[in-house]
Image 1 (cartoon, rainbow, N blue to C red):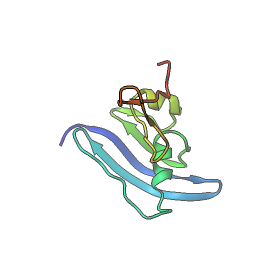
Image 2 (spheres, rainbow, N blue to C red):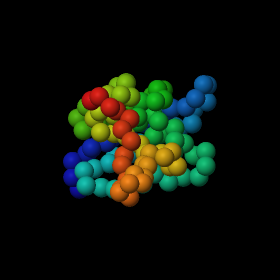
Image 3 (cartoon, one colour):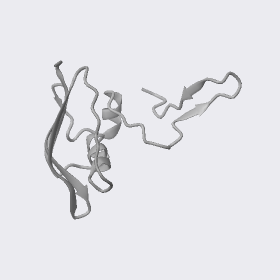
Image 4 (tube, rainbow, N blue to C red):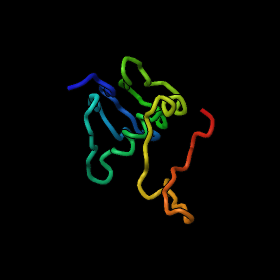
Length: 110
């Protein structure tokens, strides 16, 4: 196992007055491939949105490397390299002239 890249401790988050995820803890180490699986409504999207800073956590911490990013704004988290590629959102488009795929840049100015 490599060094810990992402560490989530006792994370609780949700929407309005309803908690969706309760006391979630996980660790992702360098060199690992991690998959988040669960039924519809299990909290997968809420967890990802909270890790990205799109949802404010109600409790717990998120660390990226040695840095606590729990209250870090989303645009700063993205600049650190933590992103999400949503399914079916046309993130890639085909260049008809030469048949290559290009990535649309969401962050034009770093």
